[in-house]
Image 1 (cartoon, rainbow, N blue to C red):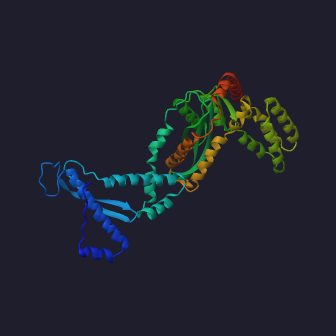
Image 2 (cartoon, rainbow, N blue to C red):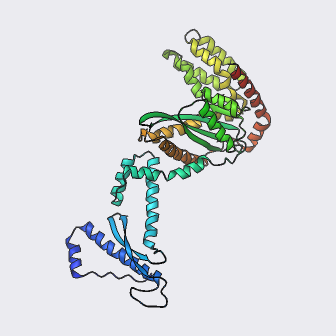
Image 3 (tube, rainbow, N blue to C red):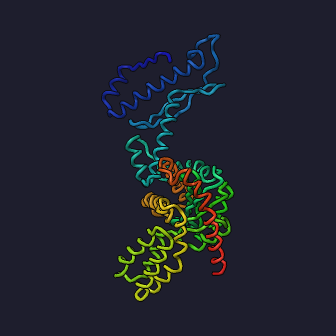
Length: 413
């Protein structure tokens, strides 16, 4: 770039020195940046103002106002205009990068659970300009394309032997009312032992229609074969498994199962029963676990009959995982992997409390899910390639038998 010369008259210097310091800096910055753009304009045109030369490429066509938000305030600049080719300035190229970084930072603050009002206050202090709550909300909509691309992406696995699903609820305004919405999420463990968020979506409630739609979307995007589904005992999930992945065995989440049992147990017996249930789940063989189950039922039936009926009815579904190698059982006997993500959803939503609309739930929670999925790439694999080969040959046929038995019992219920 050519040399830039800034000339101030004595009167201008006195005015600058006598006035407010911030205003003085703004005035000087505006003069300097306007002069830089005039030099850039001359270089692009190939001629100075009123200069006649054979190297001229274009002609001046006035100017227009352009504001630039900086730490010393908002600068009002005169952007040159050219007749044929648009004027380009390094100044605003840099500004656009900074603006993009600022927007990305604001959006990340919202994702991290900072309220839009607080974001606006922080930006005003840092940059000397303000963004309204609605303005920041509009900026957050820039996430939509990225989230939709992740949500609808083709799944790069044909086989993911283990599928874990769950739903958590958020409140949102819809049709001038506050309603509760179910945010469903699916995590898969692929044949190489790595984990991935396979999908998420928002529904009015957890029912047969919504869960089947969620599962069918996973299948249509490439998740065609599943051998075991881990979830809580929601009836609609079981129906969706049967209709979508009929060969998949169901593992009832043991954590939820224990809660269901303890709900029907008098408080003074809960601590002791919880220990005995843990020992039962940690049994090395299914026969040992069944023996411990029978002992627990005999001991507690007189004081917690409904709890023991719950244990007896749900035991086999909660022990599907016993078919797997012992070192895999702890990770796959509950939906804890996805529960950690649900806790993160809740933590990020605490500031929002009530979402302005259902779409904003999908936007924010979808961004959290994408972020969580990125972190999964650094996690240890659940099993090795060698272990999966054993699972494929020896265990998956047994899981198919369990799936057939579970489906028969569900049909008979």
